[in-house]
Amino acid sequence: MALRLLNSAVLRQLASQLPKSAQVGSVAAVHTLDKIGKREIVGYGWNGTACYADRVDYPLPAVRFREPTNEINALRAKEQGDWKKLSPQEIKALYRASFCQTIAEVQAGSGEWKLHLGVALLFTAAAIWVAVLMNLFVYDELPVTFDEEHQKAQLQRIIDLEINPVTGLTSKWDYENKKWKN
Image (tube, rainbow, N blue to C red; front, side):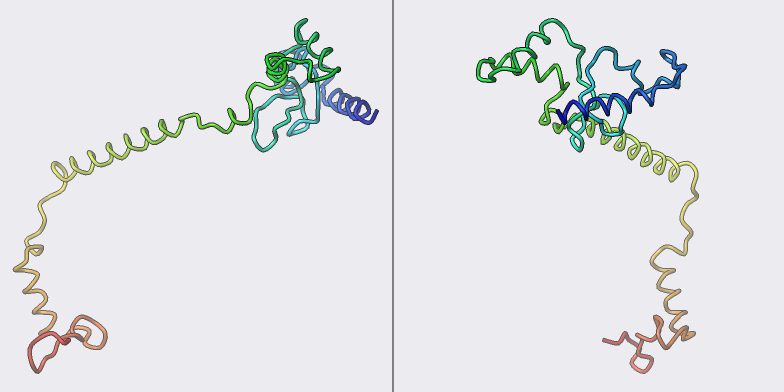
């Protein structure tokens, strides 16, 4: 009895959502009753509208997956009796009439991550090629001050001028013994 009241309340709610001038294919007809055809409304749904979606976080969609056929109606009538009289094939047919996928099928990976990884690796390879080509054809040679001889000369000049002797590089130089402190 309570289930019938709940079902009628859901139907009233869905009927109130249906625009008065909804046309098939119009923007106003999205997620309304004209989209579900003859499929049975069996619940509230994950967002309160009559739509079907296989979701792990909300495993009970508002409408059944397939429209009822004579075979499914016969199985539903048989379902009202003892379930032990149903064969495994009939139980699976009933399940597939209500749901597109099992929870295990919904949770199974689609392999889409391979596509994303491949695209990311393609962009990474393209970026590396751009960097290499920029180094070859765009950027100039490194200045001569980058060779080891010039760097040693620059370090000696910093030590000679005693630049930043409190906390800087020259604070680690022993001026009396002319060597680095331990």
